[in-house]
Length: 256
Image (cartoon, rainbow, N blue to C red; front, side):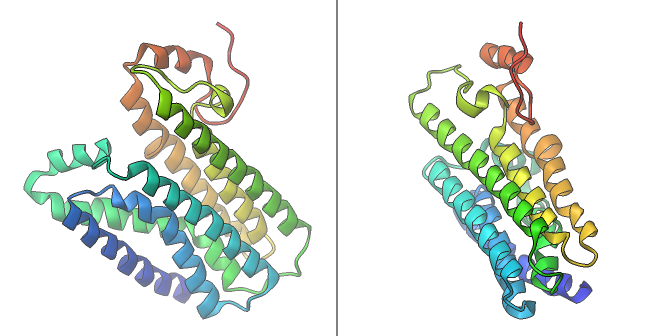
């Protein structure tokens, strides 16, 4: 498994370096967000074609990752088109000054590549090992993944529709957003828990828990929820929303 990780690491470094060149040319490091989802697709296909046996589990897993990664990258591309650099990367650019190139390469592109590699561990494991015959664990994993995919897709579509008509200071509180302040992030994490369940059919599959744990922690405590909530924390409507609605795991709103 070590050599599988090593060669995928080289692929990820080359892939993220290409996006660094694009981001530097455009002076817009937001392009890394577009490359995030598609990068997992690259890793999945590379591992499948180089190490895989093209069994049902490997083909299905690669297909699931392709659906998720392609949808996410396409969604972010459409959302970001013509909007300029995201506020997070603008703050970094201003803070880093004349060291922006080196720090962007290491702390944005390579750091995201590092996490991409860790999160992809379950996919690399599945696509490079035979495992047991396709069975109930695989079906359960697919169902978990499908529920997460549905939640993320619906939440993103609801937010997109809201943004088109929102007024200054308004906060999205309808649909799935009534039950979670970040249902799209929750759905994304659930999909990786589904891939982990599929990986349990492989010897050593328990180690694949690093994939869903890493992305869940990142989304909930590092790069997802905290960043956005700092952006909206001064909105009066968001302060009320904060009191009533769970941050991540969907649940019924708390009564005032």
